[in-house]
Picture 1 (cartoon, helix red, strand yellow):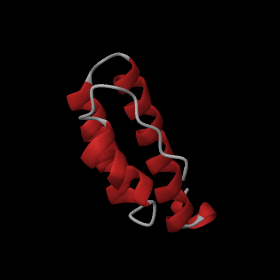
Picture 2: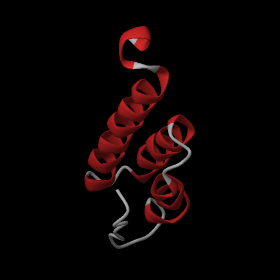
Picture 3: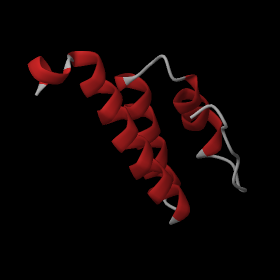
Picture 4: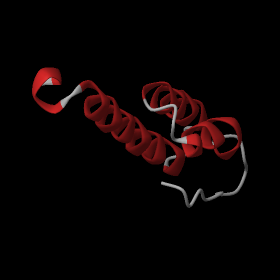
Length: 70
């Protein structure tokens, strides 16, 4: 898959999946798991600062914060 699609696209797709998992965990109130998934998403695609912001702030906040950069 990596040779066919390219390593950057694979990492971007993986980051998107981690982000979706993080959103699901956040919705279910599992903030620790959400933070872990946001961190993995950021590590896969460190150009997306929204994942870093979500890792640092969004998963810790008591109310839902939105990042419009996705």
